[in-house]
Length: 175
Image (tube, rainbow, N blue to C red; front, side, top):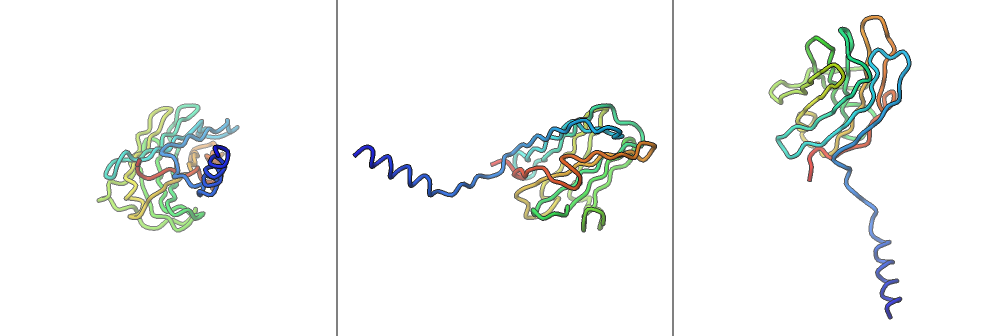
């Protein structure tokens, strides 16, 4: 009798869908990129604690950023190949956010009433904070791609997790 009940329970569990929500934090490590102007060591994407609060992308660099170095953070919320928003953060300059049509074609700048994306750029750590609702009204999941390059001298870019590739998704807001 015990074996039969156990078999029934086990077969019931096996019929349940294998679905789980994305995590609320993702870490992507990147190996050294020879010749990169700004070599990214890792990025950490973290969900917002609650609606109205900020999510963040933390970018850790192998060496300090210099004048002319730039970080671009691309955001995807709908799961297709193209980004919806690009955030450009040059060292020692104004930061700008755009709505995107594709990886290369930008649209209008992001509405300032939404609070924009904010970047704190230190010598070796950059932190982009943003309200997920600023990316799109119906956001439930977020993934990013980060590109670094220099406008002075060393043209070799570093993409994390890879050229025009995305991290895994995280929930926009923690449950």
